[in-house]
Amino acid sequence: MSAAPNRDRQAERREATRREIVDAAWEIARRDGLAAVTLREVAAMIGMRSPSLYSHFDSKNAIYDAMFGQAWTLFLAEAEKNFRDLPEAPREALLAIVRHFYDFSVTDVARYQLMNQRSIPGFVPSEAAYAPSVQVIDLLQRTFHRLGITDGADVDLFLALGGGLLERQLANEPGGDRWLRQLPRVIDMFADDLDLPGPPLRSTT
Image 1 (tube, rainbow, N blue to C red):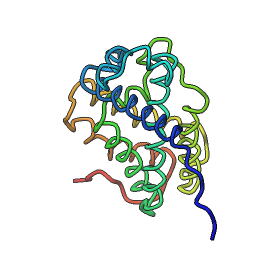
Image 2: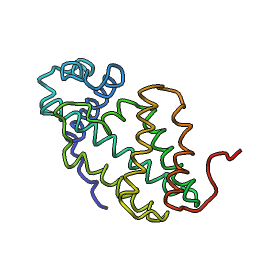
Image 3: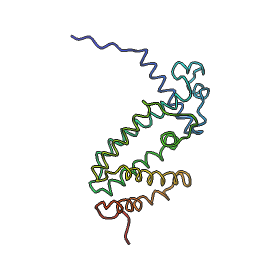
Image 4: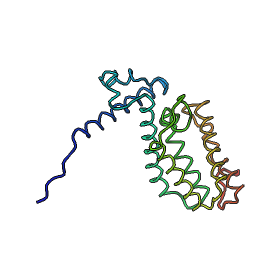
């Protein structure tokens, strides 16, 4: 009979506290904006004294770093799942990719801002926190190759077109779909330029 593996309960408690701190930081960011996250506010929310936070995170930017890594890890997991079920037609697949990114972004604007904008002066994600975003780009490139898009400049253009529409939507009509409705047209323009096969996504009537 084999002995049960030893559990490092102290490490488990420490990790649970770190998650609680990050969750509190997200709650503040979603309520008041990313810039409103402070060590004092986070500590008060979880019933901890501010100096005690330093035994878990050595600075506010370290908390942002954990938030950044968590957000991209979540998006990577969702993307890996969604990309397995993409439509066969390249245009429909491209539309599904960008719609997934839209849905993920608009459901949590603070998370989107931390992931994709330089919204925190002086904050640069660590290599470990940045790694999931690199994996997302690698996944995109492999998926695009499968769809017949092999030029890195074309991938860049696709990201700029989709991201630009999303920025307009969030800046000018949060919660609406004015720019979201342009996606089929933009995907068609992109696909036409690359001579991708398939019927147009937008109505021709």
